[in-house]
Image 1 (cartoon, rainbow, N blue to C red):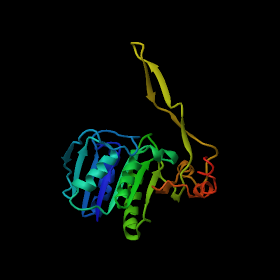
Image 2 (tube, one colour; image 1 turned 180 degrees about the vertical axis):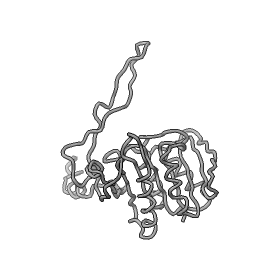
Image 3 (cartoon, rainbow, N blue to C red; image 1 turned 60 degrees about the vertical axis):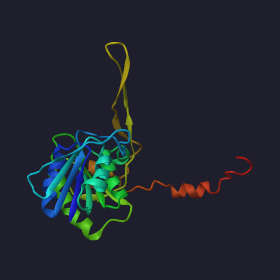
Length: 255
């Protein structure tokens, strides 16, 4: 078994180190590739207008090999799969992210995007996040992933599907299979004026649940102390709306 690890918190992130140590003895080879600095919330951006710089990094474990990239999380996985790893991995694991990737967060998340990149290249993938920033302890998340990885490799995942996992702070009460909750960010733009009188803006914001919390959602599970496991598909096609649109008189009578 060969495992590719990545993240969006950067190569020196504690969550990545804990994950590497947890999985090292499960695999014949563990490849680690990550950005040279935090690249949270860059989604699936890739670097096209400048060259990417890569340097190899060493670990004490002789069967762990790593690279540092001055690009995005998606860049890292693309580089690993197309140019760097000596043999194709059996699994891509992104994380352990510091902070939740719940609901519509998955559209912004570099962690989830790097798992998506693995999926696009035909490799089973999962994204793992610690759904708290207060006194982070990655141990429970690492143990859960360590137990889950052999199951994924034994049983496989449906084609075109990845797993998005969020682990609450403290001791989890168990796990739930969940759907994505509905979040939006309020007060997202902080408008300020610099000492020379010029406007500038900080992108910030606080997550706010849209409507009532779906009891089957990842948001509800984490709030109640459960690990959330959400299967995600890259295909965003709304097939129900396709049926509706097929009955519209599009293109008829000049409309």
